[in-house]
Length: 125
Image (spheres, rainbow, N blue to C red):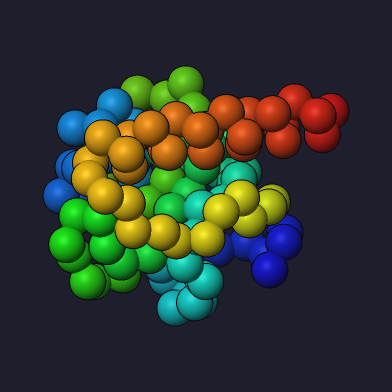
């Protein structure tokens, strides 16, 4: 799966990531590709602009949800991109999907995931 390019459209989600301090672009895939549940380091292209970030693919069990979601937190990015086309490639799987005790534990782990992904991209150079 590493390096495979996925394409989609940014759609409005439940905005839970924003509440946790990690706003995400919720992706509706065009090509129907299936991505294994987990947290990934990703490279993103939005209208020719290159970014890095972390992607979550899964059902959000800590929040009591069951519908699969693909969400990308784009590092150092604050633009409104609803309805925009987005492409991304998976660089590395960082963690498998987990259910945490509560939202605080989830936030703590998201912070750790971000550190791991930034470290991955820094070491890659």
